[in-house]
Length: 217
Image (cartoon, rainbow, N blue to C red; front, side, top):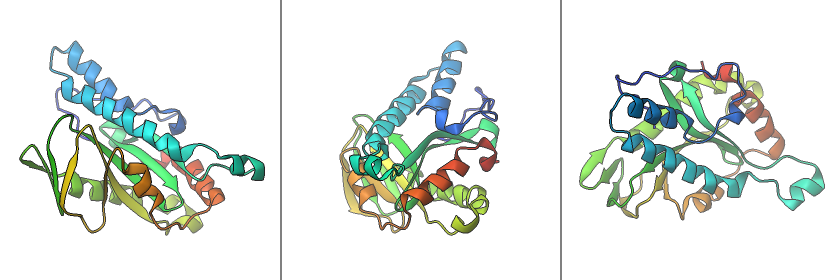
């Protein structure tokens, strides 16, 4: 989730922190708490935080070191950051997953019990079209603009927009051309199926830059 209502401004307190310490749903959880204190409904924000936590749990299937990794003394093939702040904390990236396919910018959409239809660039939720696909592209573009120039020799690393759909089945009429869209049961499989371009050491070097708060502003 990336939009904060005007009634609940947030302050970025992560500037001095290692972003690898951020937990999934950090920002939306803070907004939910602010909403409750102000007497406003917080359900959508709580659903957002829960969705991000569920996606993060799925991604642990990728980010752990395998037995082969340990035997060879190499890092895990995938690394992930959660709740990466943008615009001074006014927005964030749900998950930045760095792995063999490059940098995957994973946005979680939690639509519990809703009917979802994907028709190219239109993700329709319970009959209402959303901007999920264009927003995923825009978030990937922010990563290209902010992070890639800091990567030196790795500045040409592919950045792939990904939408993780949580809590609801998906009917597909047409897939978007350049955005990965996957439900909970298909997410890890879809990510593993992307064309590999990076090795574990390259992933580790990119992660070392991405985890610095200063790389995003």
